Image 1 (cartoon, rainbow, N blue to C red):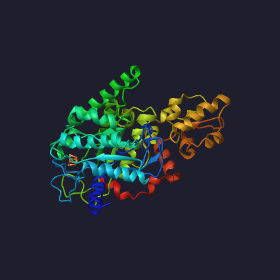
Image 2: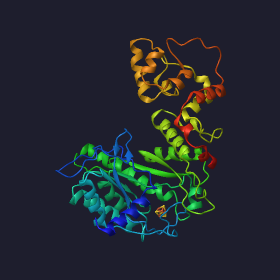
Image 3: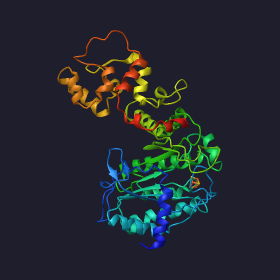
Image 4: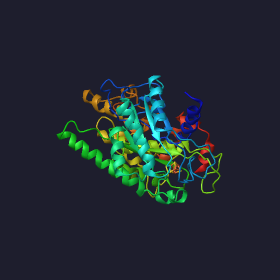
Amino acid sequence: MSERIREKLTILADAAKYDVSCSSSGSNRRNTNKGLGDANGGGICHTYTEDGRCVSLLKILLTNHCIYDCAFCVSRRSNDVKRAAFTVDEVVELTMNFYRRNYIEGLFLSSGIFKNADFTMERLVRIVKKLRLEHRFNGYIHLKTIPGASQELLTEAGLYADRMSINLEMPTESGLKLLAPEKSHEEVKRPLGFVKNQIIALADERKIIKRTPKFVPAGQSTQMVIGATPETDMEVMYTANAYYKNFDLKRVYYSGYIPISHDSRMPAIGSQPPLLRENRLYQTDWLMRFYGFEVTELLNENNPHLDIDIDPKLSWALRNIQHFPVDVNTADYRMILRIPGVGVASARKIVTARKFGRLRSDQLKAMGIAWNRSRHFIRCADSGFILGDPDPMNLKGQILAESNSKYLTIPQNQLTLF
Ligand code: SF4
């Protein structure tokens, strides 16, 4: 690799690290025509799929030049940083070289916006097209959509990329206006809506005409920056919920803001990024997608912020203690899923195993449930007699005292931001 390319790579890989929306979950592109790569493969990882697989991606920007000046972004035009831009051929060659050396299993390609949206998007499309058609690259490709790009370019991009994403940036329109007055959520909704409709249309067509090409087979995602603007957790998750529902998103990513500039509108440089809050938001996201919770059950006007010291499922259980204890031998699956410390796999095991006899605590422990937490919320065949309802505050104190949760070991100074 030449010195010039190496320098570009250093600048453009570093600028890309702030985008966390690069999970490659859900793709099933297979190696065809003796091509190179296979998005199903596993290996050395930089990112995790939904099913827990690790995949490594070459994660770069095409350029960090940008005509916009979003205050939270390291590539904003007013920022005094070294700039660089790859050519189309350079990105293609890098991807192929890294793939052949087994460094990566795919490409995550984003870009600052130079000249205008179509000018930038057209180059991104040329890269993915060249990889797929000329180099028969079948590895995973996640392509960023450039806000404002034409529908023709989006349509073309969707035929070659596995996943497309476009960042909401801030969770609310007012937050976005505060830090990026030139941008709007409408600009994000339009392409998300267009790509969603194309995915549905082409999937319908494939039912009739088998040769209809796949379109964005791993779906769409978005990312929000958390902690740069003062939105509540309720506002963040209500936005996420609306985008999941309206645009069939595969994932919403929450990226704790890392202070990068002296700007009185945002947390000062040196402030800890809100990693624990980010974690709680992801947990809430999972409860909505896999545990049957409505977002309004977890966050509402009376409860606009997630607890920092306990996870959102335990927090919900303590606020709704009247639903507990749950008898695992008779309760429905939906309610078993709501027991703190019981995951989806354990809930399924419980429902299957109880067909063969009433379950006892030793069997529940053997199924891998977090007994320290769940025992306070469960009735099973050998449960002792409980007098009266437990006091939620006492219970919380007891669980925290017994817990060696990893969260308790995180330095508390990061909480001072909120
Ligand atoms: S448009 Fe994107 S790359 Fe450009 S400054 Fe805004 S967030 Fe950064």
